Amino acid sequence: MPAAVTASIAAMLLAGAVPPTEPAPSLEPVFAAEVLLGESIDAGRTPLGGRSLIRITGGRFEGARIRGAVLPGGWDWQLHAEGGCTRLHADYMLRTDDGVTINIVNDARLCPDAAGKPAALLSTPAFEAPLGRYAWLNGGAYVGTIAPGTDQAHPSVHIRIYRAVPAAR
Image (tube, rainbow, N blue to C red; front, side):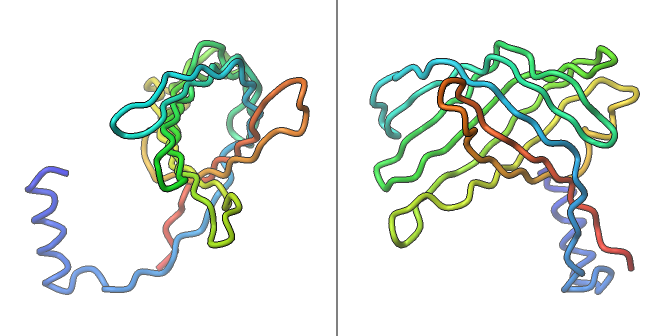
């Protein structure tokens, strides 16, 4: 964040322009997706942990304002740390039914709970959409849920993306 923006936010807080406790935002569904996965490639141990890559081979997504296909060719880069946590960084493209191509980068961290079982997987997606009909994706804050698909013969993940909507004042 640029220093001028940080200083401006700090000045507003000190001046009382922004209440110290804002109401919590609500979540608005953006779309649900099934992302198809290909082979996993073990890239070996690195100084940061074990590295693997999973190819994204396609899929579909659908929401109230947007729907289309997950394009093949993306990757989910995973880093398996010593403490049992895995960092995921997926970078792939969506193509809407009306032909617009949108980049999505979805980051997540999967850590076991106190009992050693995988906890719920939440992500922080970001979009890069061209100017026009889907430019609204470029702003805002997003959160996603990720769950494994149920068809072992066709590996996939089910992703739901939500946009954080500020509370009305």
